[in-house]
Length: 114
Ligand code: AMP
Image (cartoon, rainbow, N blue to C red):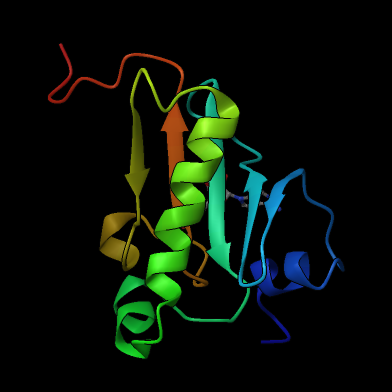
């Protein structure tokens, strides 16, 4: 999509700190990190949200999750634990409507907090 920020990152029209690039996914650091490790993992193909991605049914959601784990291993947080978040819809806080998984780790993520 021509007006999609993350499509522009895939097309290298907008710079990003890319940490992993696979055939169908791209992982780059969030510009506003909420933890020592905060990486966004996206499918290179445009799908608006997790529901749209799941409806594709061609293994792309599997690829996304596989890349999330590979990023966690590469970032050194797979052993201590990490969180994968897919905000889906404005009410959940989704602000960029190209599905993306937040891979967050490197600090305590106990839930509920406290
Ligand atoms: P969400 O609120 O789940 O839609 O997450 C969107 C995320 O994208 C936020 O955490 C932003 O900090 C992040 N973000 C926005 N623009 C960029 C960018 N150009 N490069 C990397 N991350 C970005």
